[in-house]
Amino acid sequence: AIQLQNASGTSILNVDASNGRIGINTTAPGFNLDVQGAIGIRALNTATGVGTNIRSLGNSWANHDAFVYSNSSHPAFLGMRARGDFSTPAYPQSGNILLELAGRDAIDGYTSAIGGASVIMTASQNYSATAKGSNIQFRTTADNTTTPVDRMFISQNGNVGIGNTNPAYILDVSDRIRLRNGVWSAGIWLADNTNADRVFVGSMNSNVDFAGFYSTNFNNWGFFMGRSEGTTYQQTYFVDYNGISGNTGLLQNQSWGEHLEIGVGTGTITNNFAYIDLHGADGTYPDYTFRMIHYSGGANADNEIISRGTGTLFLTTQDAAPLMLRTNSTNRLRINADGTLDYQRPSTGMVRPIQIHSFTITTGGANDVTFDTGISTTDWDCVCMEWSTAFDINEGGRQGRNLWSYEESGTWRIRVRWGVHSASPPITAHDTKLLCFNKRWVNWNGNARTTNNSY
Picture 1 (spheres, rainbow, N blue to C red):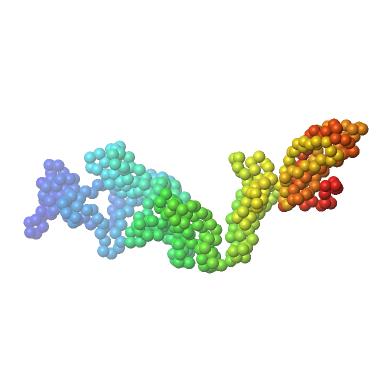
Picture 2 (picture 1 turned 90 degrees about the vertical axis):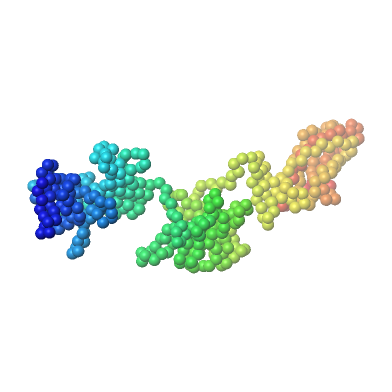
């Protein structure tokens, strides 16, 4: 062995001739170069381009870490990648690794089963004197596997991808993320271009009972939802751009177990328009193609449904159900599933506006016949349509010639008049139809009809 000692006889440098190992501050070097203590690298020496391994052994924080120290400038660990050879280096190309910092096991960390974790810095373009773009990849290896996987990627334009290596936004996350309560409730603040917080999206309290939107402009929560099955629980609060106070947003399911509601302008304390607009056209009508509107005239303002364009406006019941129109909370007009039309009669309920009644009149011989139909003259105007069986008389070639309806004692009656005849042979029967129009729909403009005047 060869030793170099200081003035006090302490061995400083030792060379073991049996294995060629060199020890500094140790007389039994265990490696080709075994240094006991710190190593300071003060300047770059480019004598060779061969890489080396530096290993630090010890059992305390002070002597088992490798570190870079400087008291005159910032410490740095620099990886410098080139192509070509050491004497004539060339610029790296796109995809070349500039530096990799990795942690692996010492047993098979150099084999194909590398595992561990690493930070990889790569060239994002072909390098030149004026082009030096780069990316950073962060990799970890899942339990019970050996292949590192990209977990986070920082692209050359500053976009950060989590779970992907091609982020299109400043933060681009694949899969779900979770925000947890800490000092404050979980959520995200949205700031304006002056970096002032404007809108908060998140939970309203530490229990995350409700999540919604909070605006600092109005110091109030906007649309928010309860956590039970994602159902909106309470009234939402929205103040429009004019700063009008009051609740003018949506309302659905005011409390648990109650009926569901959706409202526009609910709770407002000033007169405002309220709209529901539907779009979807080609831009001919940029604001809306279908609108439901409440005008700004207070509680008794007009309401309107507007359909634009020349297309048909359908009111459809998909199944065999009627369509009902109401006024003053009362049924007024009903279109039945079979297409017939009824309207509300105050005394008797829903009735048809036009009715046809059939009667069979049987009587003995007489010059004229009258028949009480029992149909009210208060609600109906009626006219005779036809008879289907002529009177069974034939006296001197004369048969019944006039048939009309008339009013008497509040009901409609039918009268038949024919020429003079005797009671033999008797009149047996005839069938006739009475066409009746409800007076709420049709006004009779003819002369009054009596028992002796048909029209």
